[in-house]
Image (cartoon, rainbow, N blue to C red; front, side, top):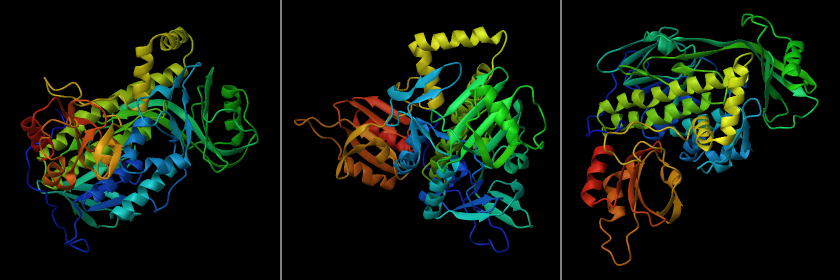
Length: 509
């Protein structure tokens, strides 16, 4: 499949620079300490890869985040790192997600352990990911602004403000929409502003909203309310008739007025602790990789906030790239594996951009577009496949990666949280077995009177901590090899031992 690990290669080595960094060059430099950069850096460090994380801001968690939701697929990725339950205890689950014009998504039938959207501000996600990264040994360099970079066949030299240079085998730019890494490699960021003069405010409310998340569009006005959990609410609102520069000051009266137009009341907003204005763009780089430099998250793609897919898509970028970099740097995979980051993640980013754009345009529909919106709502209510497709895209569980011709139908699909037997000491779940950044081989349980075949424990030992082996708890006869990011690398029905061994050699290395 696209994503197949090739034959074992030679570990990549970083170059050297002079000065205080001589002799201790990190293998990977990650730029940007948002959720995408933190997950990626933590994964690499947990896999034993030296990582330095550069961030131009001071080392503090900001409350200026625009993301307020974790969808099922992102929660599954966090579950495979042992972090989801902690966040579940902090956030608030929402079983129905409202979109526009009365269109709602019922998440109760999701084929996932997480049949809800978890509502919590982005900074709560960052707290957990930062702690994990620090515990894994990531070297944080805050107030360290990237000014440029150069690369050669051996590595990348990153130049930072003040004249210092750092050297690494690979660099990942996860430094947001205004990415210095993207600019340094000369990549264009084509697209346009989808919505201008969007207003943000953090306020207290005299009246608590009826729903956990409140959103509506009426006429020319749109408003969204989400709780921080500390008594304050984030307000995101926009009025079609007020197109002013981002630098134009925001007053609480403006926030109240737009909210009243969209929601019918302003809930007694008072004591704003922060207000700002921004514009929402739709942009994507043509390539997520230039040589030894990669882009992830908002540095690679930005889109409207409709559907709450931004942070979630960035986390998926990180989960896809981290295990591939680790495999290459440890010498378990050919460097060509890294090309599959582009072939797998760029199409997903393009789809998210289009779907979120369609949602915001339908939400703000007027005139000739109103019948289109009404027709979509009717189709959503009557046609099950339409409803399931929208649900799968927004929650992230419906994406699959390319597979080679003739591959098993499961190849490239997201693996659900399978019930397993034969994990060490007890029955378990797939996403528990994935912890540690390893592959998981799920095999049929041998019949009582049958030849048990190769010892699973022996198979696991031969691949060290790169592979966990378990049996289905059910009687299913499919053998499935699951990648560290939870996607199926290979599968076979009633597979014979030589086929399984070939798959392990090809994918695990």
